[in-house]
Length: 134
Image (cartoon, rainbow, N blue to C red):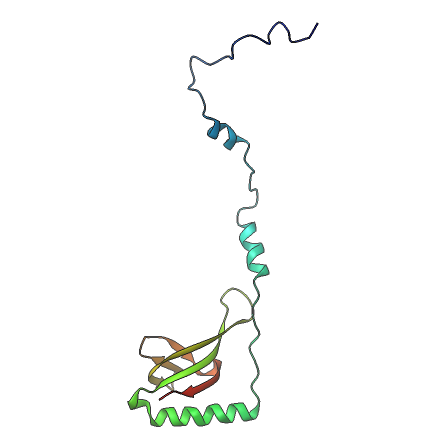
């Protein structure tokens, strides 16, 4: 004889005072618990790769200085330029190289930035390469 033979065929009990819980709600009770809130985001951030800022040699610095002089002379024309610059990462050391094409609106020598017609501002010290397109 089976130990549970006396109750095996009885109907399933349902409470008269509490509503029946859906299968979805019952499953949620046993869902994994994230004890460390934000841990997964921190791991993803630590895995994200960044590039280091390059050190330009004298020839590259001289070339960029000559381009800056030429652009200063032509600023009233709002020349279209292609520029590659280093954008530092806000969350960790390093950053990313970005290539941008746009019309130069002004050169702010006090802040040491290029201001483009679309409002983008690029620090001159982060410029790696640039060329005038028109």
